[in-house]
Length: 452
Image (cartoon, rainbow, N blue to C red; front, side, top):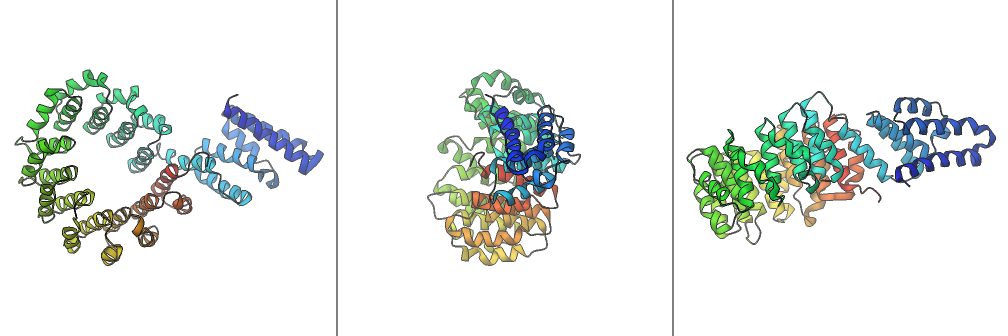
């Protein structure tokens, strides 16, 4: 029997049993109403189902399975806020969470924003779906490929690119014809990791695309599939005089063998164009060598903050080398954003929290929301030994007055706490800001298992 139908029959049966055991003969009408509500729900007449449920007395509606039916009805009507209120009442009755329902509500807070008029809110929704990384997200991400915003379509494509089933999606492949370069690049990045050689005929024409980013991404796909022309083009672009070509190619080359790519990265790290130096700094994280550490230490003193940030992030990712000394030296960088990323790198290297505690507090109290958000993200890199003090700092940032800071703090808390973050994430579903609620919903989808 279909599991959904089974649950529906159980719901109706529960209502009837409740009426017989609790209310007796007077409950005949109530049982009929519940059955009618379920039937309307099954026929997808959700508004009528809700109207029937609203006729029930509070005691009958308080029955867990009846409350679940109302919650699901509200979600189908795109009303996760009222669904959450009813869920809170359900939890009071059960004395514990109901994970399947909580997941549905969490998804509801994300999906309601996919149709929002504001691009920023749709972006928050599709970011949450992208970060979920679950096959259940595929139909929703596919819908995002039809969004009017190229940025939102790119987010949807990036989400599909992370999933094996998503990369095989017909709509994902069709997105290679999108007008936005960002979307085409996202699709090509997915192809590059798919191992599916059937995409080669789709990719080869894009070697002549008008956008350099697309041409480089197409060459990367072909190189990954060991097509000589693709690799030759990548290495050609990596030494091209055009800085955009060079930066794009350097980013694409990082997965090649260290002996091949290290000389190019070292050379690019001294390029006059900041974007090329930044791309080289990011790439050096993938070649754990003494030469890479030397180059990154030098880039940590680059004139431009974005390059210094890229160098700090890469030093944090390197393993097998003690890179804490140069990072500690950068804790007094003149740019607060750089200091935030240095904190994240040190935490990723398991540096003692006492070393970064002072800078964390200073940055947390700065006026610029971007800086507070950056330090919130940095705290998400805390390992087990630093989890408690990092969590304490994040609890303050979760209460920040600016939504973007709360969003960063929520993500970091979910990252370091996992299932232990559920109470905070549930609380954040009540936040006044739509994007914060969607972010909390996305985080809950990742940590609440469907049947636990």
